[in-house]
Amino acid sequence: MRTGTGWRIDGRLRGRGSWSERLIALQQVKTSGSEFVLGLKLLGKGFARYGRNPRLLLLGAIPALITCALFAVGWVFLILYIGDIASAVTWFADDWSDGVRQVIRFGAGAGILVVAALISALTFTALTLLIGDPFYEVISEKIEDGLGGTPGAVDLPWYRTLWPNLVDSIRLIALGIALAIPLFLLGFVPIVGQTVVPVLNAIVGGWLLAVELTGIPFNRRGMRLKERRKLLRAHRSMALGFGIPVFLVLLVPVVAIIVVPAAVSGATLMSRRLLGLNIEDQPPVPAPQIAAR
Image 1 (cartoon, rainbow, N blue to C red):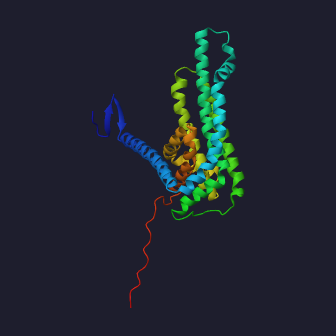
Image 2 (cartoon, rainbow, N blue to C red):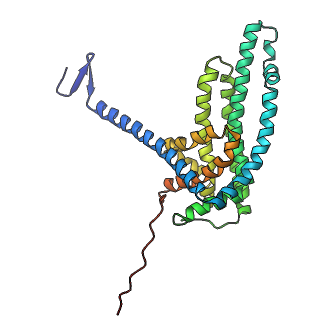
Image 3 (cartoon, rainbow, N blue to C red):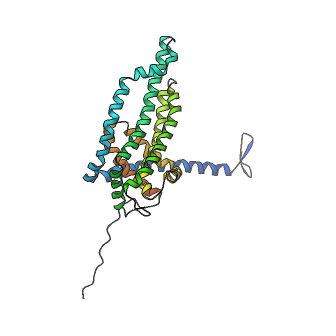
């Protein structure tokens, strides 16, 4: 029923302001969706820019190949012994009935693999960025040079930035492991461990990867982890739109050889976007015409 001040629903009066709040909430959802798509687009642009330069392709593949070989060995051993590991962490179920014990150990094995995937994606990127810091610094700098340079850059040699980058990476890995513990425990819960946990895993991993990968362009400007996290939090949907696809693709080790350097390129574009800088190629300025005398 319509009244002089608003709509009366179920005998209670709701002011017109509630509709405004709903419109604002809908607008926020729309904005979040747009930013998520923008994050995807920035990742795609990063792949395109990286792929157009054969020299950058070769440069970026070297550290990723080294890391990929190390992780391939680790995953082979994990898969070969996953049954033994699952039995070891569920020792309490040794005397349970066979059906219940198998369900618990299946959940434990799935949980271990989910957590291993999260930790692998984070540590793969961190280790690859650490090994390839001078390589990826060149890639990121080339991308920015093609867009007009790096305003606010702090000119330091790569070995001066290695330690701060390492400290930030260790902090992110520690955070990733801390978040992985509850995900691991949820992995023991049948159905939830095989459905909800992988989704949460992708969200957490995507966010941490977005923070990790933007480290190079932010560190070049003397901006540390706290500052870039603050900017990314203000555009969380964009960060997730960028980071979640990277996380998912990094689950395929061979593809990761191309993904990490391309993601560095995309993260450079996203960093520029967050800082309000140009991310599109500028048309060349025509030479001034000199009138004939």
